[in-house]
Length: 202
View 1 (cartoon, rainbow, N blue to C red):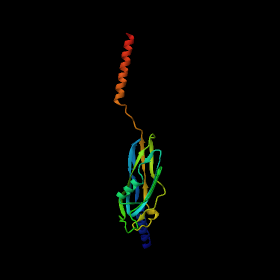
View 2: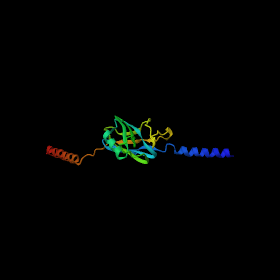
View 3: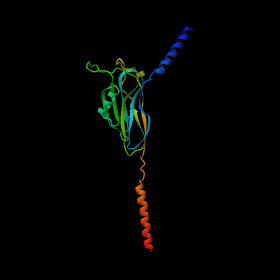
View 4: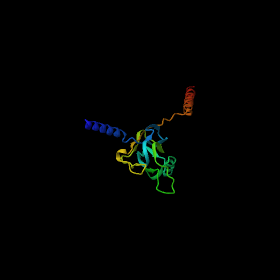
């Protein structure tokens, strides 16, 4: 009987622990957006439900024909600094952004911010919707991501590495309204044609 009780408790504990695995998430916000062609929009990269961590990284990809990243290394560095991160490495190519960050540097002359936990912002990235396409496009996290570390700078085991949630962008065509001046010009032109016809009949 004790063996059954022990195995039941162990099974319940394993189930409870499994529900906590991969609780951390790196996500883009908003996860869904409708925007018109030639517009600029912002995507917030966020950490959600993290245990204490000294950093890690993310790798984003998108269709470079549909979207253009407006950020450069300097603006990303500034965003990270505002949010308490140190930029370890960044690679920006057409349709790809790879970033590794930390909160700790082994340098006695550098003030470290310490580990972050819970929910936190990483950076805000601005994109331009390229003309002329319309339709649906994605900003997604690549399948291979840099490892995140705990507060002791030890790589988290694969089961505790965060989940990644990208974003879906719906691009709509811009409808150009016909200005009032065109309507006035058209009605004036019709009036002139009518006057010319009357004179021709007389």
